[in-house]
Image 1 (cartoon, one colour):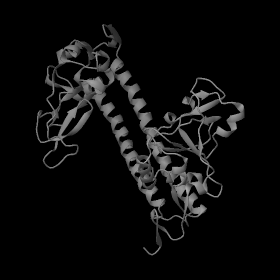
Image 2 (cartoon, rainbow, N blue to C red):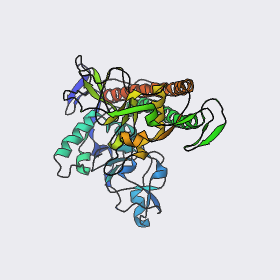
Image 3 (cartoon, rainbow, N blue to C red):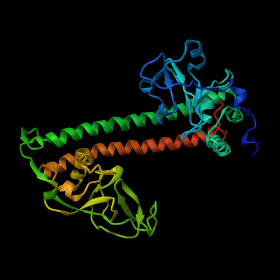
Length: 400
């Protein structure tokens, strides 16, 4: 390619350089060794405090770091910390506006020299090229981790400082969109939770509440047992030909306790079914199947409906009701027909059931819309990250 040159890490633009991480940073430093505490003279950042959504500094514990040592371990704005061992080996985090905080011994701190952009280096530590390097070195390390010499030897393609800044600004902007969608989703989920609490205890019509064996419910509602509404039965063994993705042949969804777990060509049920997770982590989870489905023995399904009702309403109701609290806790959680049949629940009119579930449908539609937007911007970020960091997309002359 005319404007690219071949290097040890592949093609990069002619005007870019390659440096090792050791050449553009001060000496990598291992963290402070201590135990986390509820109090101390500094916050104590550990690998486990770094999540996909960053660091919640309020939840970071404290430690006591001797005053003669603390300056050497204090985190500063634009420091980069990297997990050097464990399940998240190689994962990095760019420090921004930290409180008084030192970093733990399973982290390595990088401090980038002033002639280079710390955020640009941090973003490079998220590229496919970086992860190939980390994973290949983990395989050669007896402890399956990384150390300072490995990090110092990492080759990084570097454009001019101005282009580094422009690249960072673009990636920051996309990440801001990602965080915005996450906040929307979290807010809507909290709203849904509060709305379900109100709707399933007070209803929609502002009725006077009456006292019952399950607490106060609207005057017109009944109290019924689950067995008065449904006859639940267990699903069957998962078909041996179940595939993870749908194909022309295997296009019947297979449901377990956590929803769709694959696809088969066999049909167990030929109408929409209310299903409840029966065992394990998803015990009590509720779902509504497609018209045609297979249901595994990790779930119960409503084989018979005994009263006039809105099935989707009860999918939402059981989501709110948390059947898991009634499960047999001997070993892993388990609910059976015998357990749930005797549980008392409120039963509004079918018209009110319908109106309640329409409200919840609307909020779920908004949640799903923002989840789709989140997937889109996350995909955009991944694509731009790898192309900007290798010069496939150039922004050197843009004003961002």
